Length: 103
Image (cartoon, rainbow, N blue to C red; front, side, top):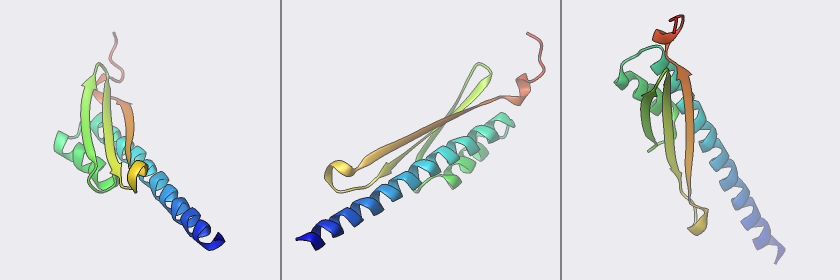
């Protein structure tokens, strides 16, 4: 009886570690995209920077609101039944073209 419980526990622990790793990759991807957008790189380059750091199959979106560039990354984390997750991360960076501009 103890061995099946330990196996389930071990599998759950591995799944949780994989989910944490994917969340960290989403955060890193959003930050990389926001930095690229802040440097006034082209949209395709910004999206590629974010996608290259994101987990496979992640959705990346960017927008400018005022002086900030915002990059959002969303990825699905597969899991059995209710353990399937939708991971999200967002990062914002000040656009370089607004630095030093008197208001």
